[in-house]
Amino acid sequence: MARDPEQGGAYVFDLVDDGAADPAGPLVPQVAAAGDDPDGDDPEAEGAAPGEPPAGPGRSLRGAASVAAVLAIVLGTGLGMDGVRDAARTERMREVHGGVVDVSAPLTETWAWEGDVGPRRAVEEGLGVEVAVLGDVLAFESGGELVALSAATGAEAWAVPLGTDPDCGPTGSVGWGQVTTSALVCLAGPDADRAVTVVGPDGAVSAPRVLSAADTRRFGEPRPGPDGTVVRAERTGRAPTSGRGDGRCTELGECTGTVRAGQDLTVRAEDAVTGEERWRVTIPFRPTPADQCANWYGTSWDGSGTAVDLNDMLDPGGFGARISDRLVQLYGCGIEAVITSDGVMLGTEIEPGTGSVESLRNGGYTSYTFGEEVRTVLYDSAGTAVGEIDGYATEAGAVDGSEPDLLLGVGEPGARAAAYGADGTRRWDAGVTTDAQGFLAQVAGTAVILTGGGTVRGLDLASGEERWAWKDTAPGEHGAELYVARGFTDGQYVLLVVENGYGSAGLVSLDAVSGEVAWEQYGEEAVLDGAGQIGGSGLLAIDGNLLEVMPDGVRGLG
Image (tube, rainbow, N blue to C red; front, side, top):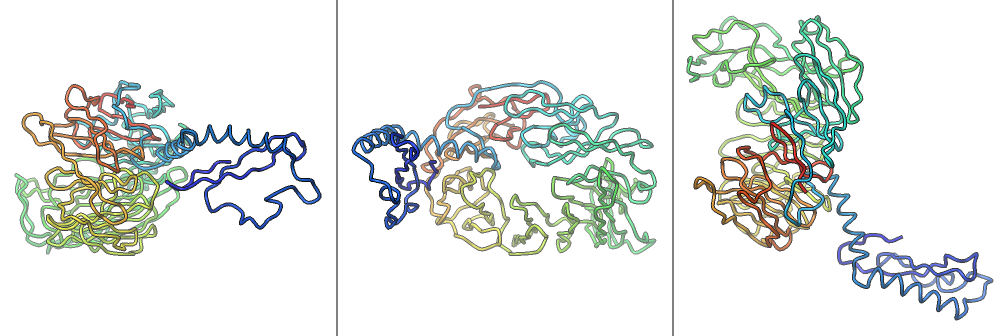
């Protein structure tokens, strides 16, 4: 059977007798990569089997004719092996982050679905369009249901009724944080009878479990958590009666000073189906700048639940959270920490309000701090620190899956961009001094990065040497300068999403190796409908399909 060798590798054909039981049977050529052949010392590989006469001229001629026919098909134009290689690349694009089957030609609409996408409150509060990727479907709340669309066709794969006041998660805002999860946890119903269900990629729903009012009183209000959990959080410990410090916030939200005393925060995760406790973590209170204690939290979890002095606008008990598929990120007065889906607490070394923790696609995590010198600590999947690098560690927005993912260290203006392995080992410094601002794609041996002034550069993935540079010269709407927001790839080309500060402006496809423009669409010619949507124009790649997700509908592009 033919195997896809390394790019540029040679092919060697062995003649294997497929007609041993039939002397007149044909000889079938077998394709193997160079180096896989026998060394020539095996007599059975060179002639007849022991005790059998060598093949006569008739068989040799028939074998030669078969070989010639197959060689003509396989090697006559090179299309045979190119087809095998393209098929392997296409399948790889369905599995990798930011992978699309084909972006070599201008995109058109392939299907469209109309309806509300995501919770209305999230859109109205400016939180974006909240969705989740479950296998090869896009899932979101719509009209009191949890709806799943096939990424390939746009057909509704399934729909699950949710009940009153639904809250499903984890989800992410399109263009800012893609959430890929194996299941969604949904809470619904009035407070006294609020119940939880778990919905899988095929639309299967677990039996509802009524959430315990006693658990709510003891552990706090419930929220959908990662990895099939319900997460609760509550301030714990003795509330200080004095010594809070000199922190003050006016009714206009102007805060000064430091809040020096407050309560800890205990976070508990329970299995959404059984109710059994998975883990419990207590985040200690730490002295915090008063602007982290302002009374600006507005929804469940986001507030202290106790009386707040409206003349002071200071809420020492306030806290909030951002929950993704692998992290529970907590913030608030005296609280700055992240808990993984396994219950490991990270980021406690970061001063509140000065940094954050993010998850990596390889299963690890990064923690970084703002300041004069930006540093990033790398963690493995168990939460153990494995390395430290200069600058912010960023992953490529799109990869082709042909090589291990690199991390790009984005540092101060004028600094050299540097690439690192998952353990923090420095692979190279860029051969040019660049103001690196983002890592758009890792594809075809090229690191595609965004640098100062909106220039996109292709760097050799092995050495960091510059291969090419491209800058958008199309005029921006309202005189706004254009910039590249995101990237996708089909393993050969890089699709750049160009914005102008008001939303989508166009699409440009570049050859990843040469940087040459394959095609571009701007203004009315652009296939994008998401005008005014900042952050990648609502584009999302699922199972090799490119989708544009908007508050009032979803479209397939291809």
